[in-house]
Image (cartoon, rainbow over the protein chains, first blue to last red):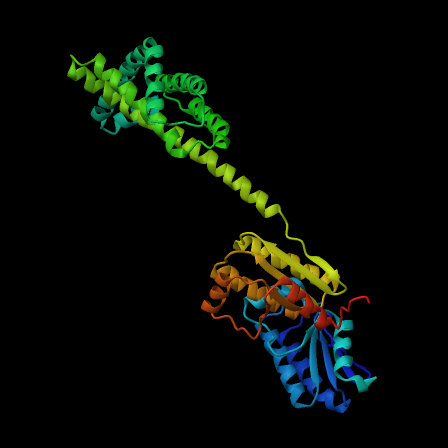
Length: 120
Length: 301
């Protein structure tokens, strides 16, 4: 299942709608890394509200997305991690160390807008 | 029982069974004689027992009269258990007795002590009665000892079980004393933790906190552990995990009021202090949280 990527001002929003296979995640990664420069975006929000499980592959892919997008000159925020998912991830040692996280889409947008005040 | 016996006989081992049967019949006959003796001397032996209890300074939490009444009941149940060979009634009585005396601070050693004293008193009376006939005395003791030991065992186990039940009940009660997640300002939560944290309570705390972050849309959480004297490595690790999980939900956690012992535990287990935001006391924690949220408290002039 392909993940829709929406352009919202100077930011990109990728909302994951359902559980993703590993291939879908890889596809999402390459789509975001391509589009971020094409759309001249300053920030990317990945919304994982709908994901009931974030396994090690998914966590690593999110980490890779964040690092690749940083190399492409933009920031990434992960939003909408569920409480149960968050604790399960931490117990597996998947803490997404250097990626900013936010409660939901609204918070993620607020974070980016604060970081790039000239963007609006 | 009958069937099993005949089957075994067919298998060709009748001798030991016949001997067993004979022995058990002899034992029950001896027990009957024993019970008759104990019934006859009930008053005397009971008084002797109570005297020994006071002498040993057991059951000091109870009055003489209470001890005498309980002693009478225990004595009768004891004799009944010897007579019938069934322990259910005695077990029920032991449980009932434990229920009544545990709240009064009667200790395990006292309960075991009085049952053993009764055993000794009765054994002495048997020595006195059969001192002229050693063979008979031996037989009587052979019958008496296993039964008496089982009785002592039953009462002690009943008492300990009752104690454990009370302890479990209290643990449950403590667990149910929920730890509140309080909102003190828009987007600022406080989680005051008081008392001992075991792994189970730690789990519950984490769940409540993560849910609280969601429902209150919190950005900053102050976890105050001033009321926690010490925690083991498991719980300390759990605390660190809670901090990390909260960050995944987009909230910053400030831990306040770490005792010296907890600080030592955290350093010993090698916590990455870059992840932990700690402040000395709750006031400092709230002040820092307000700074993070952009609040500024100014006195009204």
